[in-house]
Image 1 (cartoon, helix red, strand yellow):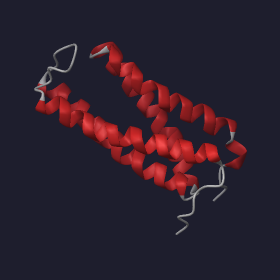
Image 2: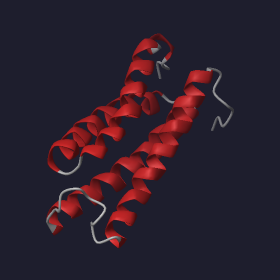
Image 3: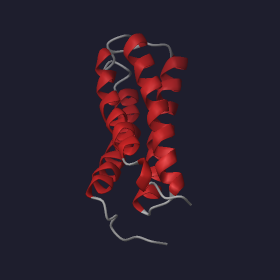
Length: 127
């Protein structure tokens, strides 16, 4: 397993930002749940809170996994990051419209990831 630092500085930055965002996505629902949801602008049902929490956990865990894949130079890490970023954008747009406007902050990094990876697509590993 290749644990060396990636040769492109941009990939290092993307991996670190993806890992930080993923950790935040794991911690945020814990804060919201312990706060009885009062941190939300719009009160939501228990079912919606469960959906939000599960999405945050899934995006967080999968984000850590794909960041690791990118860090180690695996094609699935790059492709996974692109797909996960697109899913994150859709989820955050829903959250902005249905729950709270501050969810828009979650759009920034996935958009940056997609733009950067699209610009360097020729450098994505072929295997």
